[in-house]
Image (cartoon, rainbow, N blue to C red; front, side):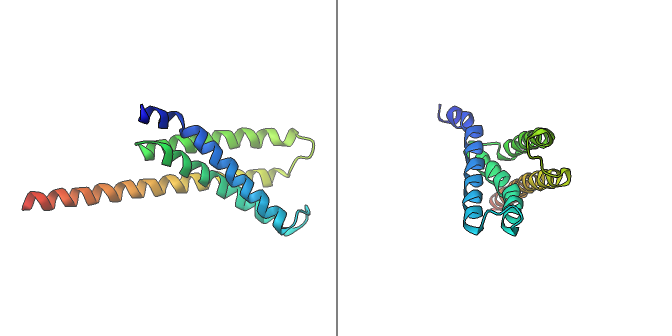
Length: 141
């Protein structure tokens, strides 16, 4: 039952962490200054594009009871699809951003999720190598 509940909570935890990262980024923006041509908003937007997806990935994979790498890959795909849809809808809003900016923010977000997946892959490979070394050590004794 506990594992089932954790699997059900993977996506809500990931989305909650994404929103939490956005809230922190927004508060930093308010602290720096909120003028559109102020450098603070651009720095915050780029940081937000990387921090929110990383929060999304880390919370989702931390909630998953096992298969962390596979969960990270699925979350990265969900994020890439969501950011693609939002990037394609954004030009039709009342105050659209330049296309290059939307693409830059999307690429930063996708790169952040891919970096987290590679980190999980590295951790998993290192863990397996360590486990094999221990088995080999115990079999020699």
